[in-house]
Image (cartoon, rainbow, N blue to C red; front, side, top):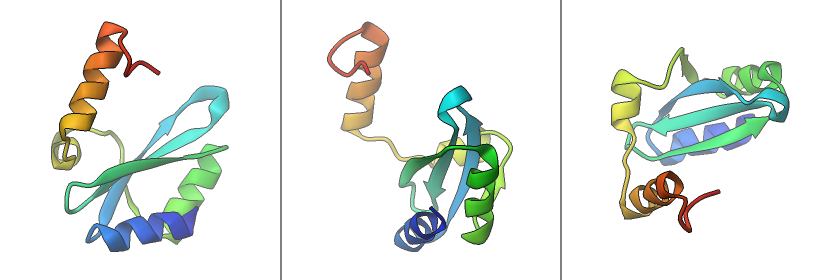
Length: 93
């Protein structure tokens, strides 16, 4: 997982991240690149997520808000998917 984070950082000119607890599913690592690209990975535990972020040199934020959220580039795909989820349409998971 640290290699995936490192590769993301390299592709996007650096990155910061945030950990989000998902209950029994584990912990999501949200990655936000300096170029606005973003993605996520899911680890089975917070300890594994935090360790992978540390090994990859990923700076972690407490929350996904403010400056970090503002960096996230969204395009037509994301807007269509979000609308579908809100409306119960085809984009719903």
